[in-house]
Every structure is written in structure tokens, then in C-alpha cells.
Length: 136
Length: 479
Image (cartoon, rainbow over all chains, first blue to last red; front, top):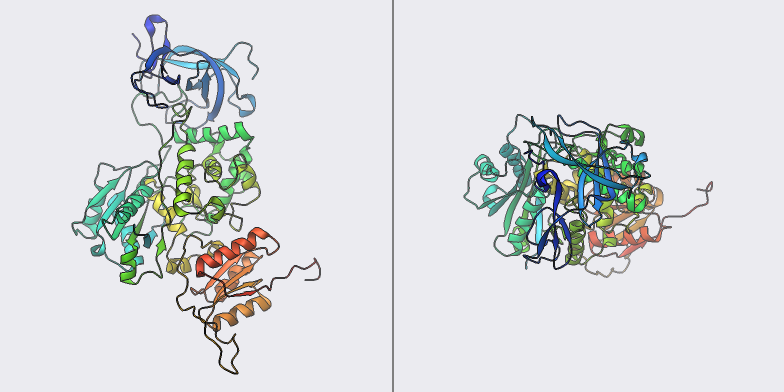
């Protein structure tokens, strides 16, 4: 089985998903598994969930200089998922040009395997792509 | 609780010192600060030493091995970019608590080159966005653009300003002007921050001697002591997106609000700011976090030159992390050095820079000799101005300057103001730069300027006894 790039990326036996948690006390949705709520401090109220795979672009930067070996430029995106989670990811399928990227554009999450810098084999990871019919 | 004072503070010129050791750099600044205070390591009761890169390396103890092992307690502090500021604050707290009277705080860092961020091993960098510091601080700028339409050029102007300030600071790593086109045309690191909008990785150290009020009085150091009006620290309040993009604003706002409250002032009372401009985007956002302007107005603030030297509230006159450099552990104390140099160092500072230096932070005691003396028959009340404080507007030249000189010769403390900054700096230098002269740039046609002039005079000398309203407003061509 392929390892995942980050703990919240789950292979799900061929149906990969992002693991999240929803607080039963205040409703806050978090990326990843956890047992205590950072917002309302409730303990043992967390329900594990599969995070949404669609959302909107909240914020972005275009990275031209990264750590050695990392291919640039790429778009670092902050996405508000439709279930209320907020997550970082790389946005592909757009020109890395601030004039061509619109705040709030709809995006979709896709899983794929890729070789990270510093590794010699592929890992399970994810990217964001413009959603169908999106006008950027 | 005792008031706490800075009685000695200094920093080395930031730069690249690959052949030096971390404890060695720390020792240099520590000795400079001790010299500044006129004290020795034997006078210190405790040491707080800030360093991030060798957080497990007992840098403080190794520093004492270089400058004197007196057996005092050493606490090594590591707190990311707040490392130096935390060492200073911890020293302050022990005096506040009444545990010690005299404490040394040192900050030091030896940096490599390159981007700060994640460590080694298999990294998600690039595959799952970016984890570099430039990318994280690019986001806070882009979020500001999203909310308020702040432009690339407005962010870039922060660097133009701070790099300009660097030409006046001999302790800055870089000392070059960078016009707007050059800043915007430089290599983009993480949009909107170009290379000239990122702070400089340098080696450096800074140190301060903190002292209780009781001890300051006992040693007769009050004339050089700078009182700490407030110190606050905070961590992030819960923020909706902070797991995806660190929220650098919430904690800053919380700490600023609490610090203003502790000091008993508001943002409107502040007329000089050193803030953590690790990236140009950060400085702009912090204008709002510190309450220097309303939310959404930071772009206008930089456009209007309000935060430049000579503006309403100059920010990072030292040149900031952007050109002075950012040796993580030393940065916090170096920022305090710029704000609160004891009088002797203030006099040594470049004249132009000092002319703009607002003195509200110093809060020195009003003169004790200010006692009313009645003139004898035949003697003018103006012949002896000992201990009086005279404010002379338009004091940079002509009649105003002559009056200022005359008042000084008669024993007064003199505050001169003028609309022309350069002439004002020259006049201040010509008036011998003694402790008795304060120069404040002010346009007497602007209410805020006049109010700031009064505040600065009272902050510095405690009172105003004499006002010479000498500045004139002339129609063009008649002057």
C-alpha cells in the first residue's frame, strides 16, 4: 500500500479521502483526527468524518522560490471546503499568475500519487483543480 | 510592584559572521550593554539568553564562560521569532515579581542562508502547497488584498521606506535605497513578496540590562534609565483558518490591546513604532493590528507616508528586519534598542534620525530644579531660565533659532519645532545636542502636529513654562 504524504490523507482501500473531525459540542470542523476541540475546548465530543471534496478558493500565493529540489512556480491555495473545513493544498490547472486566479473560485479535490522531494517513491497526496464550469 | 527600567542596551552591527561562535556573539553584545550601563557582569543577578538555533545548547551558560562565571541563574529561551523579546520580557517579569533587581537579557542568532520553514526528510512542500515562511506571510498579504483591495505596490512601498531608513542606521546589514520599481521588479519569492520584501537572514546579537526602580535610584542611574511602561505577550486565539494558514494577526491584536491597557495609553498616543517586519506584507497588516489605523486603511497609511521618517507615526526607523536583518534570537532586543536607547546613545545616533525620534517612550522625570524664583529689582524675569522648559516654534533658523540659543544660555530646556525636517536636524546639532534640547518636526497649521509637539515636550521635560509662537505661515512668494 502506498504511504500517504500527510497523516490526514487516507488511502481508504482504494477510495482515498481526507480525514476530518466535527465537534459535537460546537460544530467546528477540523482537518485530521483529534479528540479535543481547539475552539470550544470540549473533550471527547469529536466525531470522525470524511472531509468534503469541493470548496472555494479563499486565499492563495504563487510560490516562485521553495526549498531545494521543489519545482516552481506553483500555486499554494487555502480552500474553504463545503463542509466548513479549511485546508492548504496546491492548485493546478491554472496559470500561476495572480491576474488569472480569482478569490472564491470553485475548486475540486483530486487524489493522486506523486514523488515528494527527498523521497524515491510515490506517496498518496491530493491537489485542487478548478471545478467544472468554474470561471476564473 | 516595582517599575522596571532599561539602564543599558546595545547591539552589534548585524551581518554574517560565520567564523564566530554563538556564545561569542552573545558575549560581545552583553559586554556592550554592560558598558553602556556602566556595570559589570558581577552586578547581574540573573541572565535570560534567547537563541533558537542552538536551543538545546546552553548558550547562556557558555556565554558566561566567556565573560565571567559568577554562578548566577541562567535561563535559555527559545520562542521562534519572539525569542529575544521573550528573554527581555522574562527578565522584566523577575524584577516585577521582586525576585531580582538587576537582570541581563541577551539575544543571539547565527543564521544560515536560504528560506526558513520546514525541516528535512520527506516533505509535502510543493505537493500540498508550501510551508516556507515567505509563503505563509504572503498569505496574510493576499488575505488583506482579498478584504480591502490592497495592492502589490502598497506592500512594496514598505520595503522602499525601510530600505530608505537603513541609509541612516550604521548597524543595519544593508544600507541601500531601493526605488519602488526595483522592489517590485526583484525576483518574486512568494507573491506578493519579492526578494526585497523579505527580511535578511543575518547573524547578530543584542543585550539589555534591566533594573528595578529601587536599584536605579540607589545607583543614581535615573537620568539614563528608560522605564518600561508595559509588556504583554499572547498566543493565538482560536481562528477559523489557522490550521491552514497561520493567523499572525489575532495574537498581535491581543498583545497590543493588553499592552496599551497596561501602559495606560492608546494607539493614538504612540508616535514611534518598531515592529516585526519579517516580510513587507507583515508590516502593513500590523499597522492595523497595532491600531495605528482603522482596519482596511493600512494601504492608505503607507501611500500617505504616515509611517515614514517625518510622518505621523514613523515605523521601523531602524530600517526594520527588512534591511537591518533578522537574527531570530536577537531581533526582539534589537527592536527595543532602537526605541529606547539611553540618552548617551541617543545623542550618538545620527542627527537626522534622532530629529524625528519621538520621545514619548522615554518618559523621563521632569526636572527637579524647576522652582519659581522671583526676580530681584532691576533683573528681568527672563534673565534666569534655569529649569524652565521653553517651546519655540519655527526654531530651526532665524529669530526662532536665536531665541532657542538664548534660552539655552539662560539655563532653559528647549523644545524647537519646525516644518523643515532637515533644517531642524541641523539646528538641533548646532544647539550642541545636549540633553536640554528636543527637536520635534511639526507643521503649526496642523492640529495633530501641535498636539504631538506638546505631548513630546511634556514627555521629555515634564512641563512647559514658556511658549514662543514664532513660526509664521506666509503666502507663497512673500517669505
